Image (cartoon, rainbow, N blue to C red; front, top):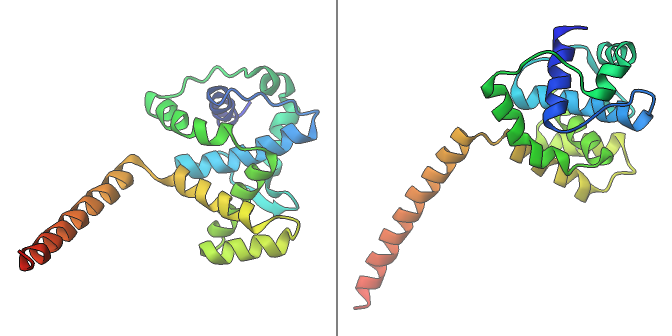
Length: 182
């Protein structure tokens, strides 16, 4: 079994997900989670993803879950993740666990389209064109999920710091305006 597959199974274990490769829905879930997770952690698991009817699809991953059915089904991996990897994946658990198959497909598809050069709005429009059965509200929820996933602590702290400074400026201006009426 390839090292990236052992790593992916370890990620799935943290998400408490098992993949029964005999079930179509499980294979779709594996494909979408692999793509989303590699974008989330910034490390390539499988580099042969292409866009198919259901979004990003890797033939290499498909071979792996068919060749190692029992390992995927039982979550068997002898690879120990680093503390940082575990913490990073655990940060995504609350968001990813609540997504159903369609939502995983939307998030993975939007990420793929953005990777191919589309900006956020273009990706949403393109996805709606490719999958007219999707509601635009569901696509927007997918975009918001991506933002939540990719919002790192450092970026969040920087944004909050900026907002606090802006609020101080507004308070100062407001106080000066109030003094004029005293």
